[in-house]
Image (cartoon, rainbow, N blue to C red; front, top):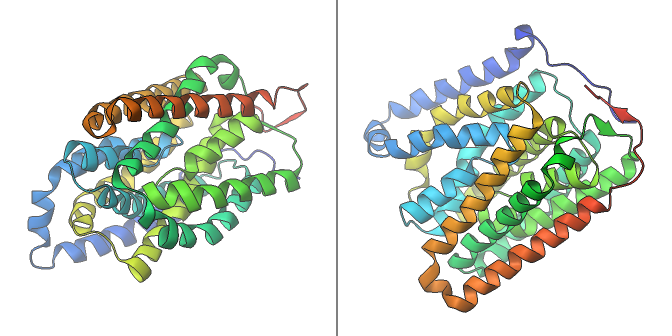
Length: 339
């Protein structure tokens, strides 16, 4: 059976998160004491400023901090897409993990069946994607895969905002169906999108929860944050042990990590206070703007045919997500955890 609603705990429940912060900052200060590292932090201060916003996005929306880090490094600074992907894994392993610990410490309600399935799917799929799929994807398509799904995701929310923001609690769906759905999402997302871009399972899992399972975004968002935290830690571990990481990841991580450690939990806290509608609207607009930015930056490489193909891919994505949402339009079942 789905777990009953558990209200966020008081400050006394936050000791696991505070212990994590103390351990992280102790390690970071130790690294800062290594000769040359303080100079790296000073040289890369712009990424730490950018991740003030990126970490808030990571904790308050179904989009990881890589959603901001990737385009800044790849589109703005014109660094390799592979560096943007590896940095997404690295920085989210701090920010999303911090947010996940904060969420669990506050005892926020999660969609446990879907989450469990997605974690198992990711456990199997992510090594396959990083080792066998990601090396075959051209850099420009890393950027465009990243942007196309965001745009479709955002447009569906803009066109069906009233329906999506009206969801409350969570439907009493079958646990086995939810677990299987989470497993499929976790496996496919990890092999393809997460392995290639460093983000994405949070958005896909959120889409399934909100569009198909009719789960309250206030439950779906923290569930997606926990899933992305696992994928980020697992992904950077695979990169470090098997394929290695791109040069430049460590220096950017060293500068931004102390910011995201507190920024992502702040976003997780804020999303529990504000209404569902502004959260969804913010996410949708950000997704659409990202697509326009990516297309403009790659206009010379894509050409007319490539731009048309990207637009067609967005249309197909919108259609698929819209069908997913319409498939759940059935007589309401009793809600669990309604507010």
